[in-house]
Image (cartoon, rainbow, N blue to C red; front, side, top):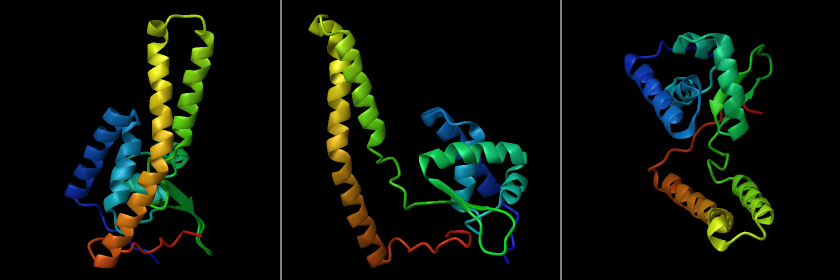
Amino acid sequence: MYYVLVPSDAELTFADHAGRLYARRYGFPPVAGRLLGYLSVCDPPDQTIAELAEALLASRSAIAGALKSLEVTGVVRRSRAAGERMDRVWIDLSSPQGMDITEYQELGGLAREGLEVLADASAERRAVLLETAAFADFLVEQMPRLQQEWESRRAALIASGELPQRPEPKGRR
């Protein structure tokens, strides 16, 4: 049985700061950023929608909507442990965390589609699309290397004790 601690003012302030950052930098609804921020500092690290709503002073439907949008990114997961009636939500650091190359593959494909539309146009008119396609291709080439480098560094940090090995949340299957 988990006992949810009442969030401290500092935890809620951190969640609010995360909400503003994710809204400003990534266009997330503020509640989605607050949810990410709170899940980064809450105890226990996996929470039910009702617990999150109570802690963040938000409606259950607002938390559920934010969760639905965050699940698409793969950074937040939910599952139900045997015997529980409610899903538990947690941050899943096993996801590629921004290193998903499909976004850049799609961007490159879109740029190439635009280049077909402008097939007879001058290089100057095609410049934005040419650079977008080249940049997307560059990222597709580099992301697997960066992912591998991060995984090696993360393993070294865990081995040295600088980074703790995270326990699996109760609800994870």
